[in-house]
Image (cartoon, helix red, strand yellow):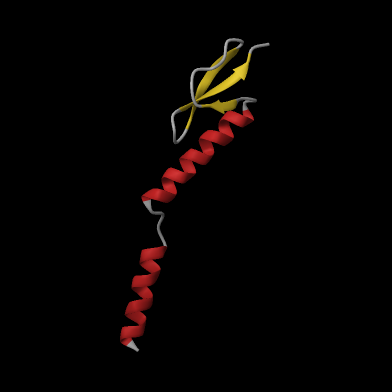
Length: 69
């Protein structure tokens, strides 16, 4: 019984926190969502001529571009 409880406790502790990969994925998704919520799109290279750069999209450091009005 003690062994079972110990294994259960170890399993809960291992899976209860976010790993660094999960934090990285959350930042990357939030970067894309933030760009799209501003009306932009993620473009890997420089923004085309009539567009301007709003920021960057994670994880590839792509540019968040939006057309000038």
